[in-house]
Structures are given as C-alpha cells and as structure tokens.
Image (cartoon, helix red, strand yellow):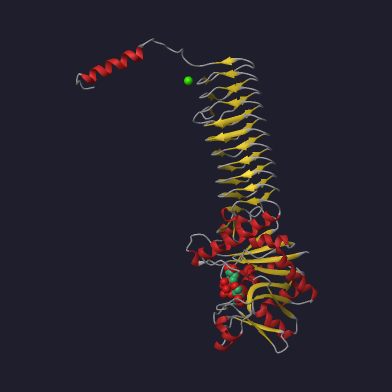
Length: 469
Ligand code: UD1
Ligand code: CA
C-alpha cells in the first residue's frame, strides 16, 4: 500500500567508539540503516526519507543509487520531534500513512510495519505507537493510559516520577505510524519544555489527545524486532539473530546446513533447493546459488551467480558467473569477470580473472588465467600462466577449442592458440599458434652418460680423504 517511511538516523552512536556513523556499520553484508529502509520498502513504502546528521555524507552514499530513498539533513540534533520537523518540506502535502523507523533498529520486519499501517488505517487513528514490555524498561518512554485503557501520552523515562518509572512498564518502541495529513498539520505544536530540553516526537500523542484526534498503541508480537544497536556487543547480538532468521528461512525452503552457526548469508542472496552450505561459508551481496550445489567449506562469494549442480570448495569469488555442474577448488580465487561455463573445472591454487573458461575445460592446478577467452574441451597443464600484463597495459590471450597446454607454459599476451593445438610443457609462447599445430619452446635436452655417477663418486672420495669442500 502506498506509504511514506521516515528513518531517523542522525545520531552519532558514541558507544560504538567509531570514526564512522553508527548506522553505517554492517550487519551481515549491509549497513545497519539499510535494513529498516528495506523493510519499509517490502512493506510497500514508495518513498523513504532518511534523516541524516552525524557523518551525513557516509550515510547518503549508502543510498546513492536508490531512487526511492532521499536523505534529509538534520544539522542540529534537537530531538526526534525536531528530526521530523526537518522532513516536513520533503514530505510536501503527503496525506497517507507515514511510518517512523529508527536507523539503528534493523530487525524490524516488513509484516510488522504492514500490520501497524493496517491498524492505523482501520481505526482512522492520527497515530499508532508500537509498544513493548521489556524486562528492564529503564530509559524508554512510558505509555500512560487512562482508566479505559486509552493511550493518554508517552512520558520519557527522565520526565516520569519515580512511581511512574516503577509502575508504567509498557514502553514506546519509537516506531509509529502517523496519518500524514494530521501529522503535518500539528507537528509544530511540539515544544522542548522537558527534562532534556529536546523536541520529543512522543509529545504528538498527548497533543492529539488534547485536540480530540484518536491515537492507539499496538503491542509488538516479537520484542526482539525492536532491539536497537548502540554498541558493538549489541551489533554482534543483532547479527546473530539476523543470521539465524535468514538461515532458518533457507533451511525451511530446502537448503541443508551442516552447522547454521557457521554460515552467513546476506540479505538479498538466494539459494536453491537441495543445495548444501558447509561451515565457514559467506554469501554476500547480489549472490544467487542454484539447486543441488555444494558450497564451502571456507568459501566467500560476493556478487556471484552459481547455477545448478555446481560445487565450490574453499574458494573466494567476486563478480563471477559459475554455470551448471562446474567444480571449483579446493582453494581457487575467482576475480571479477571470471565466467566458468558448464561442466568446466577450476582446481587448486588457481586464480582466474576476467576470463571465460569454456564448456568442459579444465584448469586443475596452480595456474593464473587472466584476460583470456578459452574454448571448450581445453586442458591447461599444472603451473601454466597467461602473462597478461606488460607493466603498463593488459593484453588478451585467446585459446581455441580442444587445446592441450602442457604444464608450466607461459602464454605471453597478446597471443592466440588455435583450435586443437598442442603446446609442449615448459614453453614460453610469445607468437600465435595455428590450429592443429604443435608449439614447443625449450632448449634441447643435454645427456651425458655416467656423469652423475662419476661426480658423486668423486665427491665421496674427497670427503673420505678429509678434504674440505
Ligand atoms: C526514543 C523515544 C522513547 C523510546 C525510545 C525507543 C523520544 C523523545 N523518545 O528515546 O520514547 O522509548 O526512543 O528506543 O523520541 N534521532 C535523530 N535526530 C535527533 C534525535 C534522535 O535522528 O535529533 C534519531 C537517533 O539517531 C535514533 C533515534 O532517533 O536513531 C532515537 O533517538 P534517541 O535519542 O536514541 O531516542 P531515545 O532517547 O532512545
Ligand atoms: Ca621454458
């Protein structure tokens, strides 16, 4: 449903002890503030306004490519109410539901936001506050209700009497849904006459009560969604919860994990049915794994696509395409632009960059293949290297179909090896090899019969007679 979300993210987060603003710290593969923005988007928000302040440019950069997100700067941090006053111009005369989220509260689910919006619309409320009952309510704003259970006001912890601090246990989560029309008409009524001298957004509740606009409070089903991150310890705790949430979702959809505590899957990654993720596997960014694959152990794939039936063991890959039934590793390094076609094999201690490995071709051991186009059915012998860099420029190597390259071959680019050619082991290939040809570049083998035997005998005699070397 059309709605606007405001994500408050101007705070510094001093307890993070960081040079960077709190909300730029990563939870799995995304900055903290990305998560509530994404939840709002999934709940149907078509406009998302992020209030930035501390380290504004770093926060803006996160959303540089998102057309549905705009950042508004709050230059002075005068409170949550003031933050909302800062976005009023950006909102224009938006009439619909306006949800307020926090940039440091990343576990909030889209369904919870949708429920909050539905509830607000159904009751024609000017505002619904999402509330919780934490075991320790210290520090939170408290929900004050009248004798009929209707919400009267939110009173900040510091503005409560000691009796209220003890008796009012229902707390403000800081997440709200407002009616946009009534919010912009009344937000200026917020003042700063309170214990902290701040403009409190929470005052809207009392303000609405006074002018007779209905407000409501909705107790959250799952308090853990409201956990905020103020320190790195809390960041780790929240990461654990999110890791579990994502992994349990994947397992429910048919993915096997030997140990889900040792698998980290990013927010937008997909993994197909009957794929197995082994320990110490990290899948980040725009990574998509097909069905019936085995990934890991010790594997990190970023922005990588893996098709069905592939196996990727002890491998680091980024911006890579791996087609079906490919086998990779153990211990391969796949760099941007590596494209491994169907049924190919990249083995141990092999690095591939910006290269196509053709169907069924094999690069099994100790090789570097860069800036290369390789046909199908090729075998690259152990220790072979494409010498793609002359110190200034990068050059391409082209290898045709069914080429056999012997071990320890240097292919000095630009160079091409034609279909069906054969390259003798230990050759340094600097000129193009025609299709079907044999190329060998190495000096003749010298053979001196009996030399080694004679030499050893001579050395042993020397030692026996007490001579020094
Ligand atoms: C706020 C609520 C409190 C609630 C609690 C839940 C108010 C007055 N109080 O208190 O009732 O129980 O959240 O966590 O709203 N921010 C800005 N600009 C500002 C001030 C804050 O963007 O000028 C952002 C912060 O970066 C943060 C969020 O708003 O993400 C909450 O601010 P914070 O000062 O931590 O509010 P609390 O005191 O925790
Ligand atoms: Ca040689």
